[in-house]
Length: 440
Image (cartoon, rainbow, N blue to C red; front, side, top):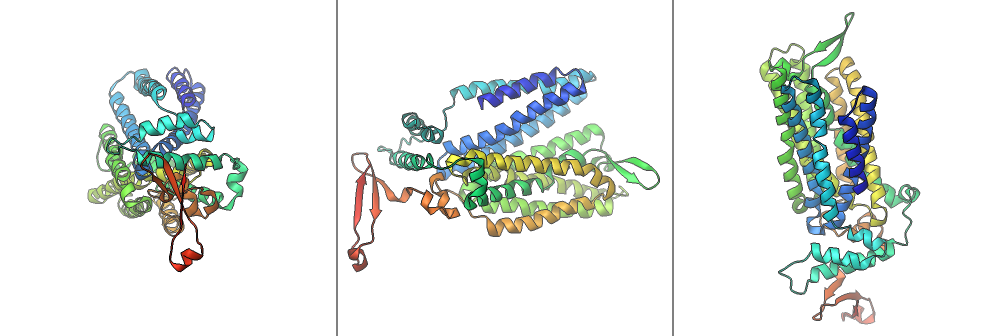
């Protein structure tokens, strides 16, 4: 994360100081490399710091932060649209991104390393200090939860250190490949909600092809409703701002109700909203005279971003960071982010041509993909709520990779962690249980 913030800051300086288009594109490439990589690293880091019962909330805060970032960016664009100085208009908002990146550098200096990473590298004493400090419970005099959690973590990571963590193993082992496909399905369907296409093209005046007339400009929904450019920018800021309460709701409640209900609600909500948008675009957009119909289209766009952030933005990150085992989690999450970015490029690059040639029918592509994909998701992907990271392998059939379950652990009166092993013997069969206690 230190390295990525440094690269991002370099990109910010170069973007702000760009002298021509070529320099600007190179600088933005550096910016994008660091920003997207940082999203992957942050999700992994937060998931490995959080307790199982609250992992969804804390990891989901990355989605809340992204929503806040988009909103601030939109507001900055609106604010600097009022200046008449062209350099100030675009250089200042981009230059201001150096403020949070500098603050983040200070925050990272104060932040601890992931305890699971430390255990993976054999640095158990440092890992214990981090876990005991972060998960300390003043109401628990004996700190039973922390001791049990750390022992399970330590036992599992000692085993994980012996496992293959290569890219080939991630794609070769059936259970790992299955997890990668499940996580990639969520990220791909997230971009199939058309949320970025809507942000990039539906609010702007678009270009459409008219037979024998070449290309001509067509009005955006806001322009068709009679709003000026400034008013359209304000409404777009409101559209993006709606993502903040939606993502907070998803992050706050996914630990209580589960990952699947929220992600599925996001998919289904976007399908309904896109269907309304399709109908309104097909019937009322060509003439631009029915203000009620166009208003419903704008409302549908607002619903798209709300449902997307409620389900995918806030709850997607907890899901695809927790399903991978620690020794290969970084590669699994990065693969998902790669699929996410590739999906973005696919949809955003074809959108201008599609909107010119088939118009509103292009939205049906998203409705179709999302409808089929959401059914696959619901019946194929398991629930992962509140399960310790060290036990999630059992959900995907890798029972042999789970070395210890939290239900097997207790803390004795002296504060030592004890493991209870239940062995089936002749006495067990007769109804008398034998419990072996092993101090650890």
